[in-house]
Image (tube, rainbow, N blue to C red):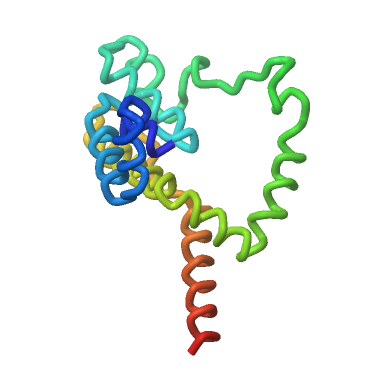
Length: 170
């Protein structure tokens, strides 16, 4: 995902390869692109994120109706279709499937190694959303906007794995 936000998919093959070889360059380009967006949001804070989008694009009536108080409008209500996981009751299955991976620190460490840039981008989006919500002129859920807890656990698992590996080598 980070390479998409950074715009690397629009580069020549050689430039795209160079961007991917330098995670610092890719991280920087993605962070700048994220900051340049008129609005960025997180699914975990979907109502607040939508309020930011509506305010940014000038949908003042929607902001007044849907973002003025903790009692949000029907526009933000959960919807399920016959094809959605919520309608099929698949959420429990997805949660059990993920739990097998999220409970294993070795797997978490490996997942983080391949997805560290995406975790960094998520955390940057959380900081950006938090700043935009603090400046908002509408009701905002008072809970702090947090980075990904799963990424934080995976980052810690990788650090512990690396410490253990280096300790075993010494």
